[in-house]
Amino acid sequence: MLQVNDLHAFYGRAHILHGISLEARAGEVVALLGRNGAGKSTAMKAIMGLVPPARGEVSFAGQRIERLPPYRIARLGLGYVPEERRIFTELSVMENLEVGRQAARAGVPVWTEEKLFALFPNLARMRERPGGRMSGGEQQMLTIARTLMGNPSCVLLDEPSEGLAPIIVEEMGNSIRALKGEGVSVILCEQNLHFALGVADRAYIIEKGQIRFGGSMAELAANDSLREQYLSV
Ligand SMILES: Nc1ncnc2c1ncn2[C@@H]1O[C@H](COP(=O)(O)OP(=O)(O)OP(=O)(O)O)[C@@H](O)[C@H]1O
Image (tube, rainbow, N blue to C red; front, top):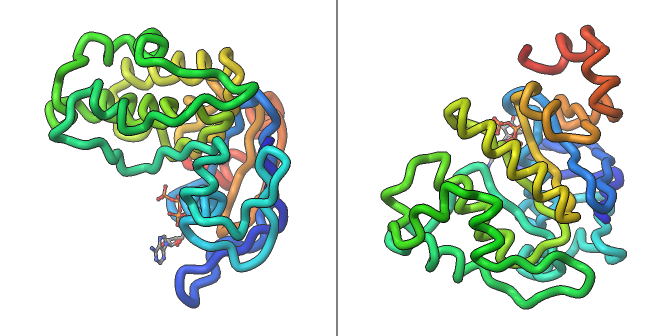
């Protein structure tokens, strides 16, 4: 589905990603874990072409994408939800969703507003509400729902649980598990190991722009020293 091989990226002259390699298979939820500033967001931006990769390969749905502009990558069916929620505050929930609509893609789940409301029941109760009058958690769900309106086969979620109340974090976890149930692949950046353990099939740990671990959640849960060394727990 998505394969990253030896990816390097810079901000100006600052070398941030030092050759990361990772993959997400079809229908898999993969967590990219690491402390503040480890390079998680940059990895997602480099995959999406928002920070042009200096070296390395990214393949998505059988195609090389590391030289494509972000809008072409998105049109291939790779969705991206950045850390900062970018909803349209003046537009209603329904209108925000409409903005994300793309044509159906063969072999990929097709989303309608009603199907999304089943995934995010909170949103169903506020269809006409302007985005600016929603809580942070609701806005986060709306951003993910809008991305799904593009019928992606894989979505990159940058810290979906960040800043959310515990009950909303739980709902977010349910929604991500349901997404997987629909066959959508998910790669999520997280600092919250507990959240990742509840939703992901596999994890990578990134530190100083390098992958230090790749394995199952069970391996990670069993390895205290790994968690102490690289994660804020
Ligand atoms: N626009 C930028 N220009 C220059 N340096 C940046 C920029 N954005 C991030 N960095 C630096 O790149 C490194 C990796 O940042 P990145 O945002 O990818 O980390 P992260 O693991 O996602 O952490 P966080 O959860 O805090 O966003 C950090 O040292 C950060 O200071």
